[in-house]
Amino acid sequence: SSDASAAPPDSGKSPEKPIVYSDTPTPDSVLLFFGNVDPSAKEDDIHRAVVAIGVTPEFISIRKGQNQRCHALVRVPNAAAAMTTTSQLDGQIFCGTRVRVRIAREQDPDQARRQGPRGDGHLAAQ
Image 1 (cartoon, one colour):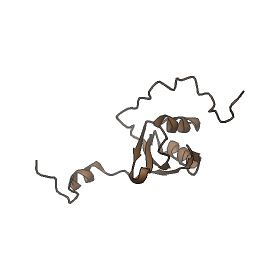
Image 2 (cartoon, rainbow, N blue to C red):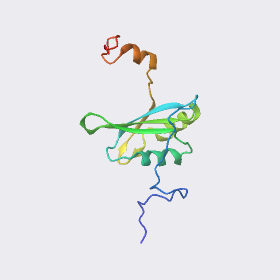
Image 3 (tube, rainbow, N blue to C red):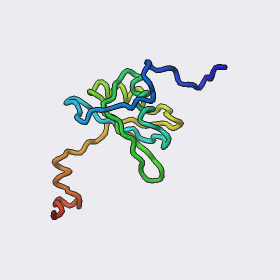
Image 4 (cartoon, rainbow, N blue to C red):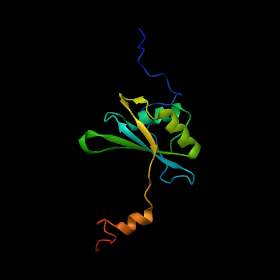
C-alpha cells in the first residue's frame, strides 16, 4: 500500500546524517526570517524545503520564543537565492502552519557592542 502523504525521496542523502554549516557567512549571503514556524519543525525540515526550490542554505537555526511560537533564521548565499526563497516559500504551509518568509533585519555588530548588555550605550563594568 502506498502512503500519499509520504515525502518524496530525496537526492540519496541519508536523513540521519547531520547537516554541517559553515561558521563564516559568504560575503554576499543574506539572512532570512521564517516566522510562524511550527514548534515541531526541525532544521532538517527547513533544509529540505529550501533545497527543494533549488537554494542551498548556508545556515539554519530554529528558535523558540514566548508562548511556544517559533521562528527560524536561514542564511542563503546571495540576493538571488533570497528572492527565490521568499517568493517560493512565503505563505506556504510548512509542517502544518503558514510560514512568513522575509529578509531579516541584521543588527550591525558595532551597534550591538555600543549598546552593550545593559542596552543603554555603555558596556557593563568588568
